[in-house]
Image: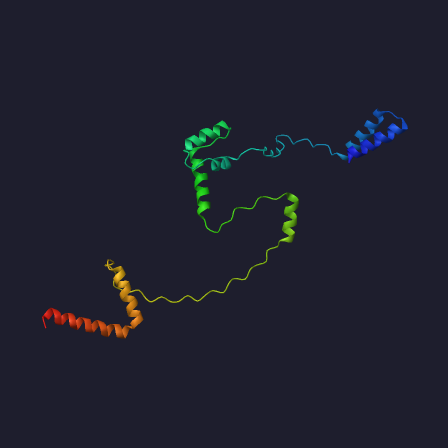
Length: 194
């Protein structure tokens, strides 16, 4: 390190009684050898700007919109954002809110993990290689009975029909048919007056 070398050079020179100017010149010569000189930019091309680091306490547009109550009208959110120097539009506010609402409704989805420092990311990539999982065996699906060709138009007697169907299943189709035939005979006799 240049600073450590400079300190040690100054201390050794102070003990020897030499001037400080000489030490500074030596240190700058050492530093100039180590530090590369910046290259001149080519004509017509601008050097790329370094990305500015986000300010501490700075709020993103989407974060600001999500922090506002959903009952607050979009135009009021735009006005509040303008006070903080954020340029927002009502369409943007609706988009952010609908995305947040969809994420809240989506079952089983987890939030995106927070970014880790660069050193930890490299270590995790090496340590955590994904092992392909074996697919679970598929369960056999029971075949459904073919649908009746006649369309169902009457659904008013739903509870009664459901009870009747359960009885048919419990009694068996043959026994249910014989009971229906007996009921039909008795109704026919009752209507005929016999």
